[in-house]
Image (tube, rainbow, N blue to C red; front, side, top):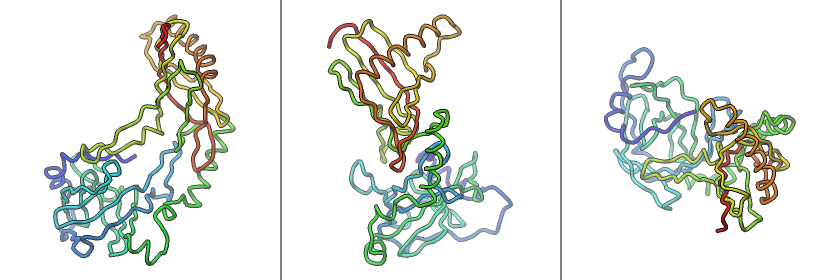
Length: 311
């Protein structure tokens, strides 16, 4: 899975990377220019792996979410949905159509006033591998979408038939055997129905300006913080559970180390299961996770704290 690169490597790192790509050294090529598409706003319509899929077997989804505009020879603007505006970032140019914008090394494959197609490159130590790209990003201009395709962005970003068939196959397997559970694009929802129980899913706070982009863990590894007042005693446990397509809970394992104390571990598991089967099942409505509108088994983590006293 590709990891975003920190902006701090932009200037110093890119100079090295652009000219030390893996494989035999080839004759130097001229740097790419974006002069012909400057000022045009491009919207990402698809992001796919080499196999043509936007999903993998773990439920990870490549979401097309870029809005991009080349501003000048050395800067490009990316849209921040949190700030609802575009921000300029340095644009570093390498040879062989390789360039860097803020947090990604890319190789342009197709460029016109209507569309852009580029590959997301992998960094390996002090070099980038031009032959190991596993993700292709496709963007269309606003004018092309509206006036030539006569459609909208949401329609273009819909899951392909190939993605739908792939996810449906995983859903069938996960619902037949919860051991084959996978991350739900729309994760499990836990809704309190008791005033003494408070539940909140821990959420990432993305920031384009702070170079923190990914919110993938919100659905890949959903973590719920649950507080229970008027509990039978004070307690504090962290554990993993599987929620099936009907919203039924299945205890998986503790997520806190017992440092080899088998007795404490056994007791912790016993108590946590009891908490799950009483407070959590009785005091909450559990909505199963789903991907592409299909409910399926998925895994969640829970940090549950009990307080004997009232609020």
